[in-house]
Length: 274
Image (cartoon, rainbow, N blue to C red):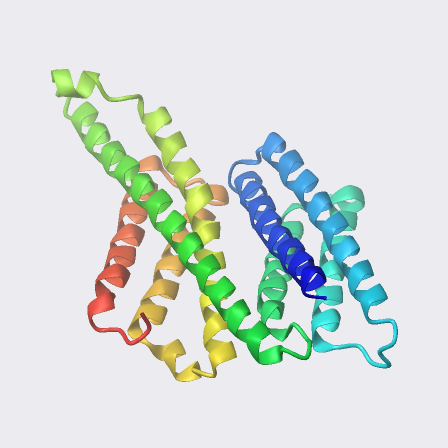
């Protein structure tokens, strides 16, 4: 029984991480209409669907004697249905953005569902799940901070080089810089990686607070500033992907969003969250 539970936990973790990876590729397609990224994201999503189907079948056969469906199976089935619908939309209807948005909801449901694992050792399962969620949150947020820091450096380089070229200052240092297009491309790649990771880490953090019953911490300065930083980055993404703003304007917005993120990091000194 313990071996079966361990296998199921490992499979569930694999589904969650593969789902997150799929969303990263879908976000890349959302930003730059990257067909290759979309194909990889779709392939990973199909793999997630297969793993979810296997997991559901295992749960069903493991609980054949049960007369009712547990909360865990209910929400797992709901997440599986969202993945199925998104794959059908992607294959037959070609509505680009809805696939990404549907799977953001599906991922959030899957992460939130980790705390409802049923069983006789519910307290132990809950404690174990809390540790897993905390590990997922910390892993995602650290990777997000790293990616967004690199992106902000590229944005600063873009503004500096643009000003130097505008003033026609051809120093030896300027000549060692890559082109503006190259800098902008790498800055966008950092955003493509960092923003989904930041969004997913915050969804897991909110899940932790809801599980622990600490809803008052949702108004904590660190939580509020985290979501403020995410909103700033979303504004950047919208302006980059849909409104085609000039590179300098986008770079300034990128730096401003990172400044809000820095304020969030500094809020550790006045926050009760961490």
